[in-house]
Length: 219
Ligand SMILES: O=C[C@H](O)[C@H](O)[C@H](O)COP(=O)(O)O
Image (cartoon, rainbow, N blue to C red; front, top):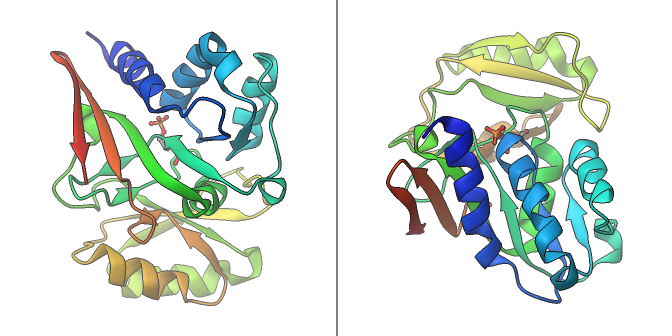
């Protein structure tokens, strides 16, 4: 079983998380792309979706699932999204695809976050994956210095703007011992839109694809 087979398998397992008749929160990335393909089978159960990126919106539109503005939606029972790293406690690093800010907003608006990953993403501690931070462009040098002070090696993502028109700084080498405190202090820095550490909006359930089947971790 290769990595794409595992992503497809975990996406299929996530179909059981859908609440029929309710708005579904849909994340971004290659694992979610497999999920969106499969959502075509469940179109009658899904009156609409809230999407975390222009890319996912386009895919949802292509299979005929209406995409609603978050401002027009009152209740999202489930948000399904991938991650770049996730701990068994449900803390994640996200934003490898640059969609972290909208993802965090929808995660925060949803009752439950179901994280879908293949086994390569499950880690004991966050930090091996370079941390994405979305920033207001005029704060690039300021935040770069701050991330260096935290012990990281920051670089601005080349030729990339987020769906919100901002830049991303990716930082290698950070040690994130306390993800909640780390997220609280970094997101409080002026110029930071948000960071890819999801500890304040953690996953409630992780579906992990392995070559022997999909495991469920309730956090
Ligand atoms: O910005 C992108 C998102 O946070 C993705 O959920 C994350 O990068 C995982 O993506 P993939 O499923 O492609 O590994």
